[in-house]
Length: 135
Image (cartoon, rainbow, N blue to C red; front, side, top):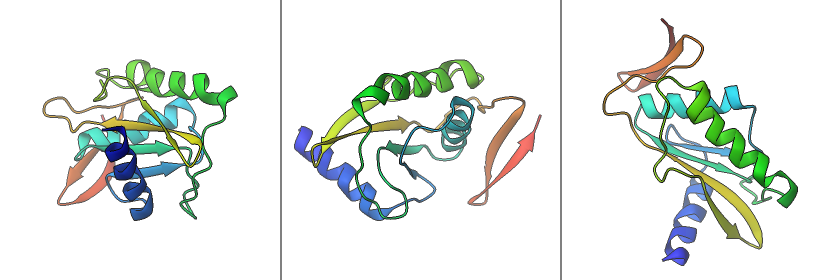
């Protein structure tokens, strides 16, 4: 099963960024991570893959010494920066080894109820276009 999931992640990396796929070399600050997560949740959900160079789609991995901080930033963004708190699916980011390097995969479910926001700002989806709104 892990091999199938790893192959699916490789395919997402090859496709590159879309409205439902975001690729990051390293985890951004928790406020920026929250923005990406609630934007995806308010639209159609998506996947954030950390440890991949966005321009070249090269797998660079998350270094061992940054793994705990990466996981903490993701979880803090969802629990502390987003209102109401966003629960991922699965609830913890997943770690996969691709080409001997570890990548972190965050699966953001689509909101079926609340509109998620952070700092009084939220993203909504309108006719296939996302735009920022303030509350």
